[in-house]
Image 1 (spheres, rainbow, N blue to C red):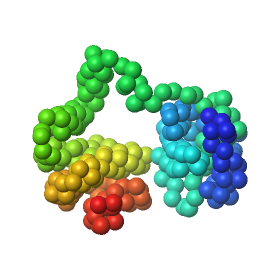
Image 2 (spheres, rainbow, N blue to C red; image 1 turned 90 degrees about the horizontal axis):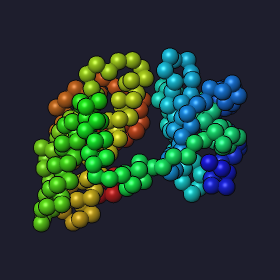
Image 3 (cartoon, helix red, strand yellow; image 1 turned 45 degrees about the vertical axis):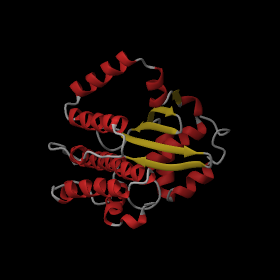
Image 4 (cartoon, rainbow, N blue to C red; image 1 turned 135 degrees about the vertical axis):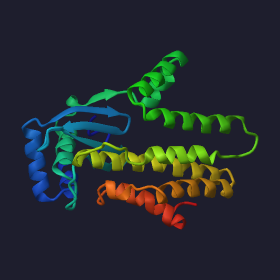
Length: 250
């Protein structure tokens, strides 16, 4: 990554995003080499930062044509501005771009892979993470119906299965795990809500409503809120779109 690709990435812009204490501590983290495994895939950069916990924190940066579009960290920091870990990774991108390893995006990897290889990868993923089996089955079911039906339709049971998969998994313990679960849940729910948007774009508001009702039913009938942190804005913004659908594009 270089400043030519993201010309607005400067120390001044990094300082603007962080409190002075966070910036100073992030600079210290960068200088002592706490940042590792910095990988760029397309417009996304991910890195590990050694912190106060046994496991390193994971930082994700999203870039667009204007510069830094979004940042995220697995740490619990919520005191205004970005945390020291994100500062450290941004400084790494700015000052040491050669340490950022460029890799192809997952979409590019999939496009280049043959069918047999993809089948093996999916099977291996399901074997390593058994909880993914229901999600894979549900998504494949939805895809097959979309490809074969002459009219727009939706399998609400499939949507419920996917929403159930998004819920926090039993046995997840520890502060960092709880935040990771909240972020995973938000990401999977966003994917389901996007299906409702696609149905609306195709001219079927009834299907969109069926999808949103199926998601809402799962959230309303399962215990999940008390299992997760209450300061993960991404998750509660996602849930809020179900409570206030008028705020979405549809």
